[in-house]
Image 1 (cartoon, helix red, strand yellow):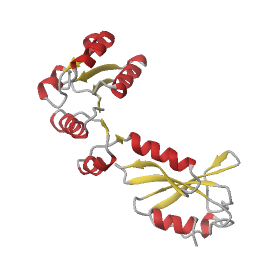
Image 2 (image 1 turned 90 degrees about the vertical axis):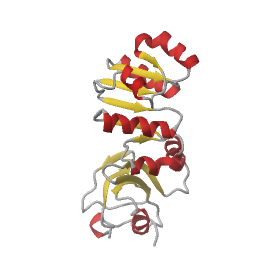
Image 3 (image 1 turned 60 degrees about the horizontal axis):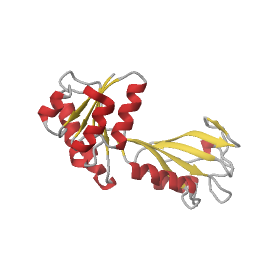
Length: 220
């Protein structure tokens, strides 16, 4: 693949370094001249100095080829949106990935159809929820393009679903159980699978169905 990485900070440089290590062609763009000097020492001609929201900078980096993938990981969400939009709409780049620095900006990326996005804050929050017992329903993954998400639910003794078969659960429309982890082993549930206290259940569902699913699996 030919990958264009916009943003030469720790995230961008590590992504570029890893991609090169596994054999992909990478060009990295960085605006700060002091940081660019470090990147140029490592990446040589594959490092470009300039503002990746500027057309002439993107074209100097080879976006007109076009790349197989553009990764926008600058520290500015507006810049990441602009870079991804230009890559897709002006140059026909088939795949873009954007970094979201402020989770409050996520809806703006969604409105523009920029997907997938990566948010360190949301990733860390998901890990925190996984480790805190009070969080009974944990958001693991959002599939924005497919308008679906995957959640994890911990079944306990007081759960109304404990001791019931999947066929006996009134799951909300647009949801399905996809995995049951028990005793360190996971299985794909069918209609006869009986949920037990201690089970970790993965479900795939449409956004907005979490409360319905919680009522069925966790609360009477």
